[in-house]
Image (cartoon, rainbow, N blue to C red; front, side, top):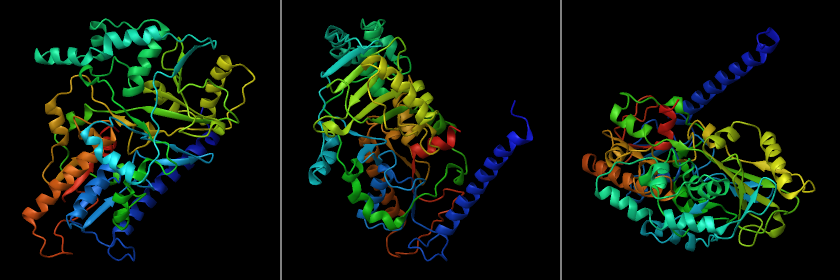
Length: 475
């Protein structure tokens, strides 16, 4: 029982510390925006307030800056710029806690990323997804490319045609699991489930039962970004001019209240695109002992339990002697892992690795994974719509409310879940706000903004990032 005075004392202390921290955070924010400060950011009035310094917010701000709109204030909850694009050092190697790939490199909307990559000589790696090996719980090599070909023949090679046929007939959306079954894929054996996970869960961070069938697609060419400077290095030219307009480490979900509250149609659209859990577990070993394949698929009776192992100790990523391994979990398993300690997770992984590769393998010397689902201002890694989300829902989620604008990958019907969605919607909303300002407030009196940048009421032209908005509604 935990009812004794001795046991309740630590709880009271933690509550006191929590309340104290909240008060300090709130007072810090008030002081930071007070006019009497000697800080570079002195105003409590601003023409444009942006909540969140992720890619969408920074892109919107830079778009405004390029149009000579300089009266901007960006509030950010973390102590860095980039949002869910965040590189960090892990045992002297650079790892990405969030976004790590440039997807769909052949699409026109991806050209800005490729141009930035080239301009900054950002190092990338092209994966060979056929360079895989499958091992069961006893370590036996059970690789069967006939199963891979079966999935390609029944699903990959026919899905777009099947989707278009259903849309032409005005058939409603359905869970991806139902669509797979209609196409002849059952996915019952452990090896079939492992391949299915690699093809679907690994991409969408949810099982087929929860994924919209109409959201399935055949992925195009993509680059991993293992550059030591991190993915955000491609966007530093956007954020550097905004450093003096950004206050980091002060935005908390309960420091902003929307008055009046969001209308039900807006809330409904937001609830229909929740954040998914995608947990990348980085492990450091004294040496590499696993298979020399790009991917190792763990074929287990417990679907989703450490299913995809990615070799990071190979040319083009890290040195062969780096001893770096990445294991990905998603969905409910990801939430479970993010809710427990690093040591607990490491113990589980080591038990599996020793069964697969033998008792003589070395112990992992370090482990790290980011707990995006536990972050109050993100609550997940990226967005993915529920089954049945319509174009009207997408229209509603991106629609502005007066001078309150919404941006972020979650507002993009075409690019939700990807950096392109954040970049493009940020640019679009920045242009819309600029047009609004030019139309109603000609730039004739610089330095005299009319709109209050209050912390309680959002009454100014501004961009409200959807990743932040989720935190207001889902708690």
